[in-house]
Image (cartoon, rainbow, N blue to C red; front, side, top):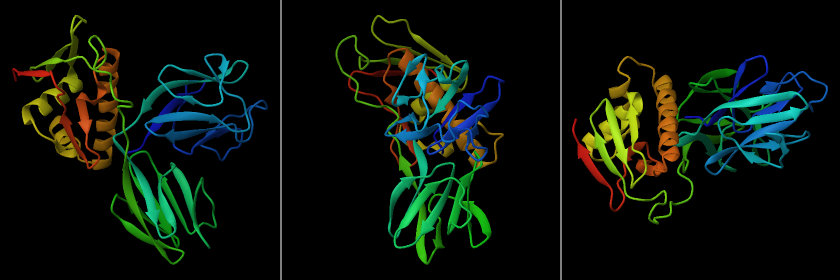
Length: 298
């Protein structure tokens, strides 16, 4: 339940960065780059609406050679920090919901991967580790944790804790992974779809376009949702698909990655990404728009 981008450095090392994470020359940032041409706080990853974006801070960022003020991150991009110094975007994962925090004097906001909560006249959430903070929260990629008063524990959605004499709660924020509504014009992305599911495969037909053939996990997701024919908990569905996975946090990561990949395939085939729709409360469904048809051959 964390939106992140996986960046690859020139030496082939992979780094996962989420909202609020910084790229820079300092050893303490999320992705340190030891090069004199890189600023201490060169750029930041930010979750804006339903997309992850890169924001230059004290340095220059070029996307595929063109300087940008800010840019949406997509797989395959090359982020230039300086001449002959670049990062490659290998994966962008946007789950249906992300972890956030709210409380007395603090409006609901998304948690960076490592952040500090300072409580004074007003509560403030800052990216990074600040030793004098009233609480420190972080994600190890699978689970969230919080330390208050020297005591650390796991943090789950719905949990509450006290820091600086005030109460705070971990909550989830739904993301609209589908972006703007599709245009329902003939030949547009919203054109009706005929779906044939066979459990291990699924075929999606849209007008005169070549059919989209799904197999593996993508086909399982579409077929399971077609068979259930109503909204279902993502966890219940994921446990049907990955029966060998006991850890909920790891299961969630598998689900988020699989859903992003499935929606990417839908988008590339000019099929509505919200065909697999989340309702923001933990449920997911096969969303048939007007004109869509389903043939269940499972």
